[in-house]
Every structure is written in structure tokens, then in C-alpha cells.
Image 1 (cartoon, rainbow, N blue to C red):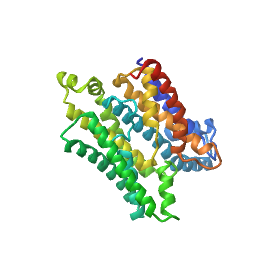
Image 2 (cartoon, rainbow, N blue to C red; image 1 turned 90 degrees about the horizontal axis):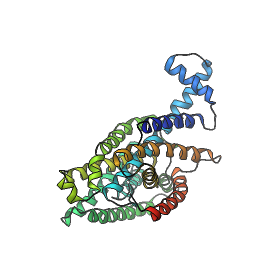
Image 3 (cartoon, rainbow, N blue to C red; image 1 turned 120 degrees about the vertical axis):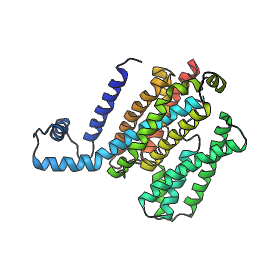
Image 4 (spheres, one colour; image 1 turned 45 degrees about the vertical axis):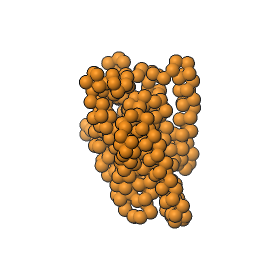
Length: 337
């Protein structure tokens, strides 16, 4: 990977974010947007007072929180997906492998039914995401095995269990108010994101992403096998639990902010791996930035393609399927790296 790759990708993220800020029902020309940025950062007075108030309200209260949420969610899902795929040496692994997304979805539905507080819903989402992963690790511990296959099987069991509980909640929910809210949440949406939510989740999300990236070298060694990693001095258990904890945390936070948004953590790592190779020291930061750009563009499509907004989870599913077919074609030719 060239030294200029990451700076150029960061520039692409910034330009894509500015592009997304200019789009909406009230279209903001690029010149007007740049004048506003120049006024806020340098004090240059190139727009009228009335326009300043209007743009400040649109950009800071409505569009900026949404753009930042898309960047955080895209980066979080992509990094956690890449980390899980390398850790479990399996190309079909996604952030939901250990049951975190199923647990978080159940937590969100549980909060919606038993509380009217949005804070309680978000806390419930995060807590049950961790409980689901804890159940996965507990199942592996019951059989006195830390082998990858037991963690994967534990994740399947935990995910199925919380999916069943979610179905019970949906069946018993009020069909006029609670059930539509749960179903809409599960389809994924950034429409209700506000500045407070973004501020609360941004710090733990960034810390979680950095923890995984800082363990890239150990993840590389772990991908060669446990015995090889131990012979090279890697504390397999500690590295694995640290990466799983960080990936679980950032995956659950994405559900807290935007509901269920699938496919991002599966396809973005594959695309990046095809371009720059399997070295996680390069792959993880590139996947984070690529995922951020991808979800920004997907969010633009979801809110502008029609006069009404499409849930972003539907758009990621529709666009993810052809990408995945392309990945399978590449895997058949050259194998997964």
C-alpha cells in the first residue's frame, strides 16, 4: 500500500461528506456550502445573515449528525467484519456471527415495548448485544473449548435464541404503535439520528475501531493458526477476547444508532482485500474509510431516490447482493486470501 493511500482516502471521505451535506430536499449549492464553511472556520463573511441562520439549522441540526452517523456506522461495521473474518479465518463471517446483532435487535424491541424513554431503548440495545456475545462465549466455555468452531456454533445458537425472543416480542407487541416501530427499526434508518446520540457513541466507537486496528499485527499472526501464534509469542486468548470485545461493542453501537444495517461488514472487507491484499495492518484502516464512504453514498440514495425515504438496511441489502456475487466470482478464480 502506498504512503499516499490513507491520506487520499481520508480526503475522499471528507469530500463525500461535503457532497452529502449539500444534498437534500433543500439543495445547497457547493459554492454556498463552501462560503458557509469559510464563515464558520475563518470568519469570512460571504453570505447573508438570513442564509447563515437557515444553513446553520439545516446543516448542524439535521444533516451533519446524519452524515457523522453514516461515517461511524460504515467504519464500525467494516472494521468489525474484517476483524472477524481474519480472526475466524472464514470469508462468510460478518459482525453478526457471535449473535451481537440479534441480541441488540432484541434489546431494542424490548426497550420499545417496556419503556417510552429513547435512552432506555439505546441502553437495552447495547446491553443485550453484550449479553448475546457473553452467551456465545459461555457456550464455548461449558464445553471447555476455545476452538474457533465452538465459538461459531455458540454464536449460531445465541443468535437463533435471541431471534426467537425477538419474534415473541413482535407477536405480542401492540400492532398499531409498537409493532410498526420495531419493524421499521429493524429495517435500519438514520432518519432519527440527533447530535446527542452521535456525541455519545462517537468516542466508544472510535476507541473500539482503534483497538482493533492496533491489534492488526496479532490478528495477522492468529490467521496462521493458534499453534503458530503461540509459538511466536502471541497471547491467543487475550488478543482474541480483546478483539471480540471491541468488535462487539462497535457492532452493538451501530444498532443503537441506526438499527439493523446488514451486508456492510460482509462485502466491504472483501472488496478491500481484493484491492490491497490480506495484510490486516493495511486492510483494517482502508476498510474503515471505504465503509464510511460506502454508507454515506448509500444513505444519499436511501433519502433521495424517491420522494419518500427508503430504510437504509433495504438499500444495503439490494446493493450488497451484486457485490457479493462479484466477490464469489473472484473467490472461485483465485480463492479467498
